[in-house]
Amino acid sequence: MPGPRLDTSWGTSEARRIRQIPESRLEACGIDTQNALLAGEPEIIAVRQQMPSVEERKAERRAPAFSTTGRRQVARYPAQTTALRASGAWIFAPFDRVVLSVDRMAAAWRENQELHQRIAELKLENERLRIGGIENQELRRSLQLPISRRYNLQPVEILALSGEGLPTSATISAGRRQGISVGDAVLTGDGLLGRIGEAFDDLSRVTLVTDPNSAVACEVESTGVLGVLRLATIPHPRLVLANVPLTDTVHVGQRVLTSGYSRHYPRGLAVGRVVRAVPDASRLMLEVEVEPAVRLSRLRHAFVIPGAGRLGGS
Image (tube, one colour):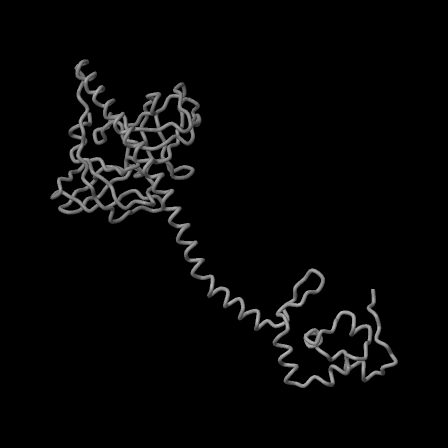
């Protein structure tokens, strides 16, 4: 709808002077700018003529920083608004830091509680496993079976990885002077990494399980299905548990461990997990794809079992 028109009896000059009066100055003088200006009240002209420039500036400074138009607030003086925001940020900055510190302390407290709970659970589990280990030793002794040995772990640092696309070998920071020998098993906290291929005075080269010439005798946990872990390159590089009959039962998600039938690796070391089990091209054997337990892209430290093959291998 078009707005109300100015009284044409004033003349063109008076109407132009009325429109030139700033809204803030009219409000400072107590004049309703929404009605008076459009209604054409003559006293507006008198106010405009009698207001000195100094008084205009004072009234302008006293005017509110926002004008309300309907339900919207429009910033009348952006510079004043920016100064107010900066002052507010400076005043409330210490409170923001306090709130942030309290939030961090609460998060640290919750994490500390979770860690304490996890430590307690691990202690209970460790005690349960210790008792189970003692019972197992007693049963093996009563059955006149060989007593399982505990191996000493030699910590080493991974200095370099080599191989195109998929790493096939690694260099570690220990050698013959540290008691490392060719054939010793190398592992991380996640599982089997490989074996010592070459040993020098203070360095050694590790042949990883992903090496094309590597073969590891393995078994599927809980079912005892036996196979040999090898690297298959077609159609893409992957670890495959070979020589598994089609009649054997293998499920996705089952763990694959060393079987102890290899000359270099003791029994029970984690190798990986089954991610795919399908019949091969001959329809006589299973092709079991295994995801390695060790993330080869995140190797920093490892452990060597000195003499593992000589002590526990067969």
